[in-house]
Length: 299
Image 1 (cartoon, rainbow, N blue to C red):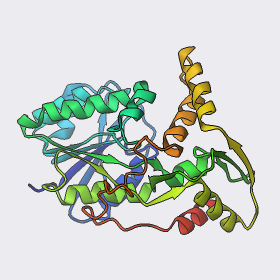
Image 2 (image 1 turned 120 degrees about the vertical axis):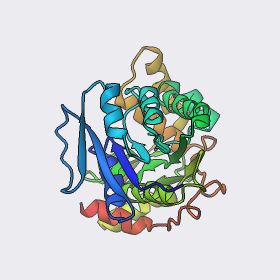
Image 3 (image 1 turned 135 degrees about the vertical axis):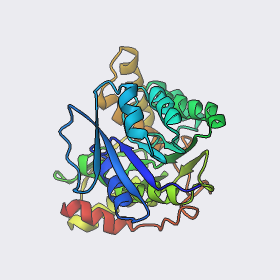
Image 4 (image 1 turned 180 degrees about the horizontal axis):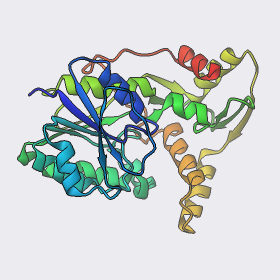
C-alpha cells in the first residue's frame, strides 16, 4: 500500500496547520485541504483547496475525496464523522486518520469521567473497525495534551504572564505530552509506514513530564520564582462533576477534568513510560522539555 495523495479536514484550526506543514515538507506527498465555504482560513501557496458546504454534503465530499489515498481529520466531533467515513469508502480512500488526537480514550476511566467529550471519539474508531472489510484502513494517533499550545494558553494551569502555577496534589505524577510539530511529524510518518500503522492506535509523545518538572523549566526560562497554588485533585474533580450534573458543560469544567486525568494516576496518561508508545515505530525523537518551554516563553 502506498499513501501519496492526502487531504486534510480542519487544516485551519489549532492542530491542522502543523499537520499540513509536516506533510507539505515531504515531497512524497501531494497534499490538499477541505475547507468550508464559510471558513476564513488561508493556506500556503500550492496547496489545493476543496471548498465544501458547511453541512458537508456527500456530493462535495465525494468530489474532494476522488483520487485521495488518505483522509486526515482534525475536525470537532460535533461534525458527523460517520458520513465523512462513508464518503471516503465510496471514493476509494485507503486510510482514514480520525480526530483522535488528545487523551488516551482506550482507558476506561477516561471514558467514564468524560463520556460526552470522549464518547464520540470512541464511536468513530468503532465505526472504522466495522468498516475494515470495505478496504478502508485507519490510524488513531494518541498525543496527550498539545503541550506548546496548552502551555501558551494556560490550559495546563501555568499562567506565564503572571508567573503563577496551579499544581494538583504534589505535582509529581508523570504524563506524556506532544508538541504540535511532533504531532504533525507523527501523522506524516504514520502515512509513510502504512502497513505497520494500519488499524491501530498509535500513542506518541514529545516527552514525559510532571507538573513539577514543567514548573522548574518555566522558572528556568523566566529567571523567576513562580507563585504556586496547590489544590486537591479530588476536590477539583468533585466540583467539576457537580457542575456537570447541573448541565454546565463549559470550558472551565472541561479544563478541570482534562487536567485531572493528566495529573492523577490511573487515566492512561503515562503511556510512554508504560511501554505503550509508538515513537520508535514512527521514527520520532524525544524533544527537549527545557527548549520547548523556553520557546513558548519567548513567544
